Length: 568
Image (cartoon, rainbow, N blue to C red; front, side, top):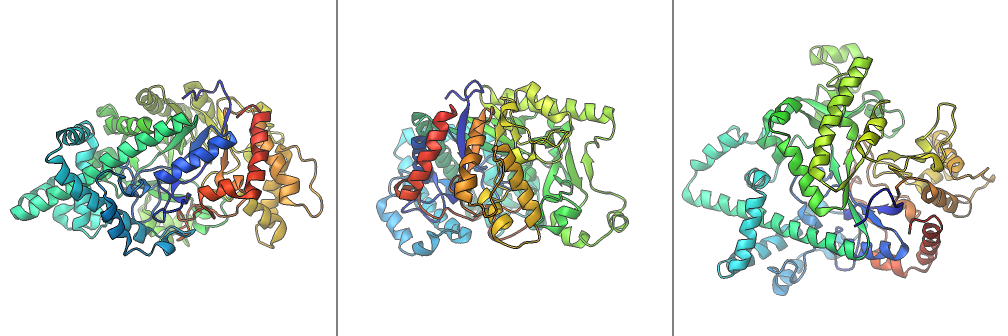
C-alpha cells in the first residue's frame, strides 16, 4: 500500500463495533469490516480508520483494554466454517438459544454478545483439539504461533485463566492474595490437584487458540483491504489499563501510585469533574527508567503487533510521550475529590497533587528535557514500526515544542479546523496546513457536526452559544460568508464543510462515519461512565448503506468532491 504523504487521500473513521450486517452477532465484526471496506472503496475513500482492537474489560472501552497485545474476540467473524473448526451444526446449536433480534439492534449488548461469542469459540476449540491430534500441519502452525508470540502470550493466557478463577473479573488486586502476582499464583497453582492443574492448563490453551484465530483473521482482513486499494489505520492508546495482563506481569515497569489523564478542560461541558480537575483515565504511569533497562521490549512488542495488522497507525494521546497529567488518586475516588478545594485535596492526599509528569513545562529547561525524552521514546516506536507510518493524536493542551518535534520525526499530527486559530484570531485555511498532518472535524470523543447543528440552531440548551461559535468557525474554514436566518444543514452547511476538509493540504482527510452520514449519534463522552459509551451502532446495515437512494445521492456528491480535490 502506498500510504505516504506524497499523495493526499481521504478516509472514514468508524468504530468496528458500530458496523452492522445481516446475520451479525450483535456487534461489528471482520465480515462487517469487509463489507464496509467495499463500500468505502466504491466511493473513493482510500483509508478506513478503526479504534483499538485489543481485548476489552468490564467497561467495554477500547482505550482501557485488559491486554495491550491480545485481540478482542468479538471482532472475529464467527459462522459455519469460520473459523474452520466451527461446524454448521455447532453454529446453529449455539444460535438456537440466542435472542438474535434483540442483539441485532442499534445498541451493543456486551454481556450477551460476549457470552454468545465465547460459546461459539468454545465449540470451535473442541473441534480444533480433536483435529490437531491427527493434523500435523495445523498442530505445527499453532505451535509456531505460540512460540513466536510467547513473550506476551504466556503471561496473557495465565492472566485470562486466573480471571476465570475470579468470576471473569480483571481487577487482580481484588483477587485472593495468593493469586495477586505471577510468582504467588504459580505457587498456588502447583498446590492444586492434578485435575485442577490440567483444567487450568486447558483454559490457557483455549485463550492461545482464540488469539491464533484472531491474528489469522485480521491478517486476512488486511490483505482484503489491500486488494480493494484501501489502507487500514489502527490505533495504539498511549496508556494501558491498570487491570491488564501487562501491568499484572510487569509491575516494575509501571508507577501504580499515579493515574494518567488530562488537565482541566472547559470545552467538555458534559462532566463537572473534567472541568474542575481534568480527565482521570486511571492508566498507570510508565517507569521509563525500568523500560529503558529492557530496551523498551514491551513497547516494541506493541508496535510490532499493530504493524502486522495495519498499514499505518495512530498513537492516541501522543503528548503522553513528552509528559502526562498525573493524579495521585484512582478514578474510583473522583466523586470524593469533586467537591474539595485545592487545600482540602492536599490534606486528603498527604500533599501530593495533580501535575504533569515527569515535569511541568514551567521553564525552558523543563521543556527541553520533556522534548528530548519524548523524542527518544518515539524514535524507539518508529524503529519498531519499520516502514509503517505513524500518526500522533496531538490534541488538548499542547506545548509549543510538541508539533515541531513530531514534524521533525516524520509523525503526522492532527488538525481540527475549528481549533486551528492563529494568534490574530484568524481561522487557519486548509491550504496552510502542513502536508504531514491529518485533518478532521471530530474524533470518537466529539459530538458529530449534525448534533452540534441541532444544539446550535434547533434546540434551546445552556451551551447553545458556545456550540454556535464552534460551527461559525467551521463555516469560516469552509468559506461560508454567512448563514441565513433559518439555515438548513443540508443546503447551507454539509456540502461546503465536506469540500473544505477534502480541499485542505493535509495528507489525510478523515470523516467520522456519523459526520459522513449526517447522523447525531455519539460514540463516547469523555469523563463519563454512560451506558451509551462504546455501544452505539449504525442505524442501518452496511448493505443498506449501498442500497439507500438518499445515501447513494449523498455519496455520489462525496465521490465527486474526492475526485475534484484529488483525493480519490
